[in-house]
Length: 256
Image (cartoon, rainbow, N blue to C red; front, side, top):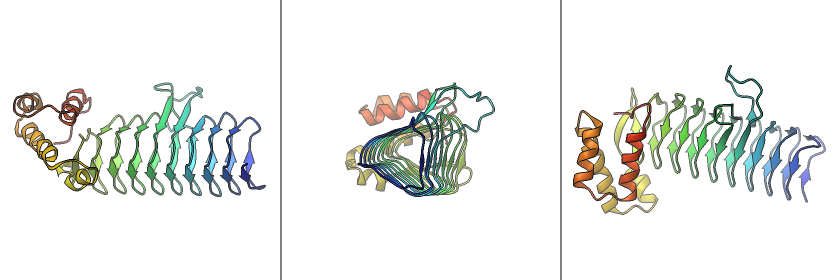
């Protein structure tokens, strides 16, 4: 049974699961789907096209599936998908997709801190922590377990790898490869995210191999030559292959 404040508005075409708490002054539009066991505190807006899973907590002022801030958007029927077990804090805004991809996706078990923005057609993985007032432009991809500090500005189409730690206040327009710390001005490679990797159960041997992979990669002026050195000198585990594939498939280039 849902606990819905009489001061909330829910469109009759909205689909609401079971055991949800919907606080006063929430607004839930048509063409929305909300699963089970979610908590929507007061003044939460769930806009047209939202698809929200289970066990999420959404804090006051958050607006999910907002109209894209993209002048190319012509009102096409798109969605915004949010997984399970997310904490979406005060004043977070997540836009729905455009004709480019059709949907914006936020995975599960993420913490999206106060006042951060996820633009149209972004894809956010699982287990990410994204700091206060950080802004993602359109079609950014963030892989699992990334930690992105406060007031970070990310250019459209960038790709952020898994297990990274990005320093607060960074701004960048290139991809950030996995397992590293990125920081300073301009944003650059600052070493391996050793503490984060150890917390996630990476062995010392694997951490050493990741460190050596980046030493070889960045020791060459041409990244292709660095990748050749990695393949020659290191066991190509799934983590090393992930680094190689990330760099080879980067469209914007990686930070150096």
